[in-house]
Length: 358
Image (cartoon, rainbow, N blue to C red; front, side, top):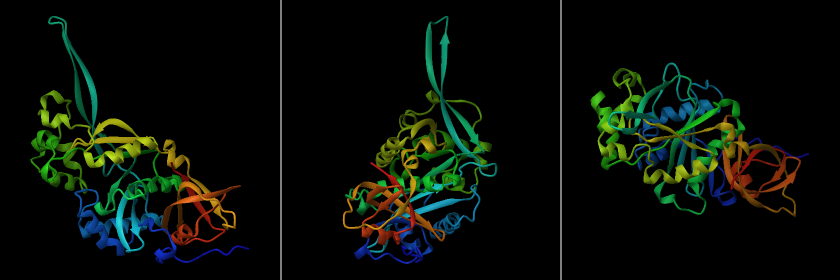
C-alpha cells in the first residue's frame, strides 16, 4: 500500500532536492517580494502598494479555499525561486469581471459605411461604441516577471501565464464560459496614454493613472461622464488613433502566447488606454482541454521522462504546480522525477493533474 504524503503545502520545498522554481498560490509572507516585483512595473491591477496587495493576497487565499462566491473570487499565483526563496513572477485570475454592482465597460469597434450619391464619394469609418457588461467573463491579468529572470531557459513567463489555465482546467466550475485578457498598448513617457488624452480626459478631467485607479473601486463615472453616442475615430488626434487596439512592445510575447492557445482579438478596447481585448471560450483553450487528473505512481527502474507538462495539486486550500517532464504509464497513471515530486510535496498514490504543453 502506497503512503499518502499529508504534509502541508505551507512547508517550504527544499531547493537542493526539488525543481528550482515552483508556481503556487500567494501567501501573506510574499507581500514584501510582491511589492518589490510590482515596483518594477506600472501595472494597475497589481500596483506596488502594500495595502492593496495585502488585500489581494487575503482575497486570493479565501478564493483558493473556496470561501468566496464567483463574483468575488480572485486568484493570485506567484513563481518562487526556491534557491533564493524569493518571488520572481505573478499572475491573476478574476473569476468574474463584470457584475450588476461593478459592470465591465469597454469600447466596441464597429464600421460605418457612409456614401454620397451626388458626389459619388464613400467612406468606411471606424466607430467606438461604449458597452456595459453586467454578466461578464472570467479575466486574466497581473502577469509580471522580474526583469533579471527574463530570457531564462525555464521560460518562467510562459509558466506563470499558463498555470492559470491549468487551474481553470482542474476546477472548471469556478469560472465563466469565456475568458478575457486586456493587453497593454504602447504608452509614452511616464505611462502617458495618447488615447486617454484625446478622449477620456476631455470627458472626465482626470489624469489617466488616477482615472484607472478610481475605476478599480468605482466605475460609476464611466457611465455618467463618457459619451453614449458613437465616437468616430476620424475626429480623434492621429496620435490617439495610431496605437488604438495595438499591443505594446513589452506585451507582445504575452499576446503571441495567448494566440497560440486559442485567444483572438475581439475588436474591443479598454476605454482608458485603448489597449486591445483578447478572448476565448474556456473549453477551447488548449491548456484547459488537455488538463486531466492522473494518479502518481512510483518511478521504478525504467522510467522514461519526456515532453513537458504543467503538473498541479490543490490541497488544504493551497495550490502548487511545476513544469516537468513526465512518464506516462497508461490507465491514468504517471511518474514524475523526484525533484518535481519534492517541489510539489506529493508522494506515490496521490491524485494530481497534468496538462501537456508544447
